[in-house]
Image (cartoon, rainbow, N blue to C red; front, side, top):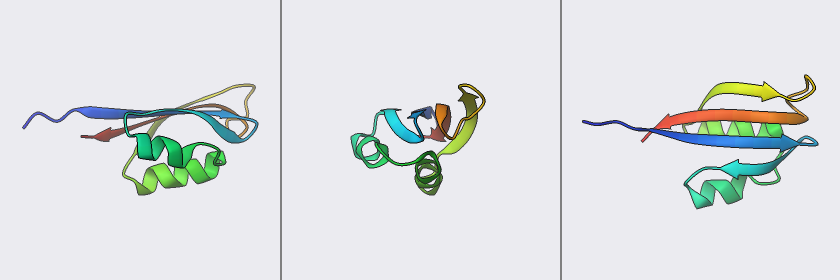
Length: 72
């Protein structure tokens, strides 16, 4: 069985999700505008695993990029 990884990227600006990169349109719409904590909780509940956080100015909950992956 050939398993492929799917990726989800959240961009956080002023504490809210400002951009979502994912193939699932329903998930993308659901995450837009949520706080960083709410978005991470939803992504985890949907089976996504956090793999990396790139903070901007040392405050990832306010400004940063969150990278998740999940098996297809």
